[in-house]
Length: 407
Image (cartoon, rainbow, N blue to C red; front, side, top):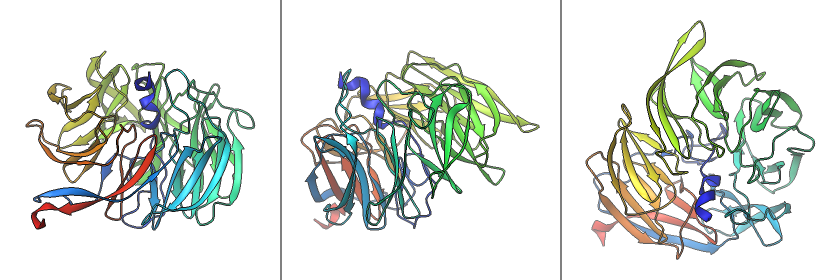
């Protein structure tokens, strides 16, 4: 069933782009947390949505990355999986690059790519499910370098293909290659593509690295199939690892941070809250709560005002982040993914309607709803330079926020 593979677009955090304010340079936003950092977009307003443009697009689960006036996404054109750059104002194609033959859907999935490109310093980093990993010029789409994960780079091929999202830290671009021994992570020079290091003795499935600042330094924090690991991005040295014991054969989520030292670990059928502490540079992970057989979802939570919001199956759900207790759940609006914007949860409902729900522990409060697509979407929205970018398996659109009080 298609529900079985909705997770393929909900799995990753990436890149540390040298980007301007307002850009959305990689999956789940500038801070890789599914939160739009811009304020005063929706609060205290009678707001709604209007479509700027809508265009046809091939099958694929990738979300949209935007830097300046250029957006990038990935899809299948029927014969190839492609990376496409487009003009953000009009949706018109600027260039496209063929990655190789279409990754055919199987076991309930649909055709096309599942990872999301990372945009950094004028370069597009993209991976297709077959393992083709390319660096392209953002301006013209010219190939700068390429590798094949699993062929010229040691990697473990997941059941639904590669979905890891490239993460840029300093001079390195890091992906999760998920192979034992010592190939859970692989780093490349971001400009030349030269392999720099490999590290991490565990398997991975559909996870991606997460940039984490601790004590003023950028580190890599990532979930492998069995461990939470912190790595030095310069040489791949594992600074510490803790077994998380929340195991699943479809691991997909990044660690969801709740403040500076608490986090949520989640797989499709289980989730738990943890607190980290350090002694001598080594972390200890204390379990705060656990919900076995609970999530039934591939929706990555967002954290807001001491609560977690996510879609459990088709139910929008609010949890108390301190103890994991369910506060409320709602069948409307349905959907597969959400993004937090100015105190509101932005969701593409199963009906194809863009929906805004107030993020509050007091219950379900729908604030706006606008029809964009005729079909559901598995992809979270992106937000760049005042506009929402959304897509499903057939179309892509840009939507603007409007003041309904002026109507």
